[in-house]
Amino acid sequence: MIRTLLISFIFISTNVISSDDNQTIKYIFSTNNTNQLVMDIEAALARAQSSQGIIPEWAANEITAKADVKYMPQVEINKENELVRHRLVSRLNVWKRSLDLGAEEYLHFGATTVDIFDTVLVLQVKQSIDILLESLLDIESQLLALTKNHIDTYMVGRTIGQHALPMTFGKKTSTWLAENRRNIERLKTVEIKINQSVILKGAVGTYLGLGEMAIETEELMAKELGLSKPYIADWHGIRDVFAEYALTLALISKSFGRIGDELTLLQMTEIGETLENLGFKAIGSSTMPHKKNPRGPGNLINYSRIIPRYAEIILDDMVNSFERDQPRSDVSIKDISITSELMINTAKKLFEELEVDKEQMRKNLDMTKGLILSQRVTFFLADKIGKDTADKVMHDVSMKALEDNITLKKAIKDNDKISIYFSELELDRLLNPETYIGLAIEQTKLVIQDIESKR
Image (tube, rainbow, N blue to C red):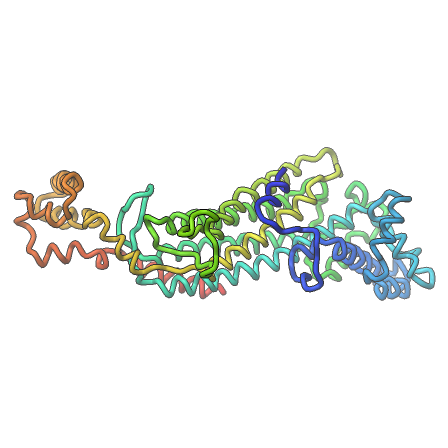
């Protein structure tokens, strides 16, 4: 159901791989790359066992030399699988036909299928994380530039959909920037655990069948694959690291979903503070030529709904019976990884096309006719007549301004109780929104400085 929703939402096939697509997550999970990873792992195992004297060095050399998918054609695997009905044995049988000198006798020596495919998945997730991190760093660069460019772009700060207080657009995007950095750090933390998840523990996770030096063999195999010292405890039926990976991607999707939702609102006709520039020829509606419908923001919202559903499936797969029940979420791990790349690429394109209307932002600050500065005036009056009295009087004055559709300045001047405390110059100063943004600029500069120190 989830996959059907995704395909109907965005017309991208995850099954067709082009020759120039080998740097994408879609390729990482392709049949061709999966077969190559199986061979890489088996060759790494052979080299590890050779260094321990478990199998001959010449056999490990032959296996390594032939660890290339050209020796494992998928067409032949499919034919073999019709006979043996086993996903790994069919692959190994095809590969063995190319091995010389009897090296096939030492291929997959003492190992079990689930360990090989678990390690394939570990490598695929690691490669996916590397791509996702690189893209999140690209987005960080985009958000840094956006924040610096708008550090003093004045706009309305809104709470619960209402005008609240003045702020800057740079302050807003600095929160996106900081959240994106936290997501980078979350993904890096997961990667550390993925790097420790190479597994070679045998049928029930006791290393049985791999010999007395099995723990060292596992460590050596991990080193051959460029990964860290593996966890000693068996995790095959537990899947918590994969669940953490999925939940991290779900968190990231919600971050982008929130940004997408906000940019959808900011692009509303009534607000018009940002615009996704899709080009002059882009069609917003087939029947309403004037419309400029947001594309990227809406897509981010949809991704933020789809990705957490995949994460739920992967989280549920932590519930498995006994030592080594058969996990069932490998396809969902593939789907969540590919979809997360699509989401992040959508975000990158959106930030590239995003236009900010500074004039409209400044114009919207005056929409309430000065009422957005009522807090400031209240603080000023508190020193004159006391805080509680100032709160009450300014509430009445503000309501009067709203009811009579007049400026706050006029409402103040019309009120005999408080007008005596303001000169014309003082009132103009207090009602200038550009001078009442708190520490927004200083705060934004500190966020930029913090992010740049971590790059």
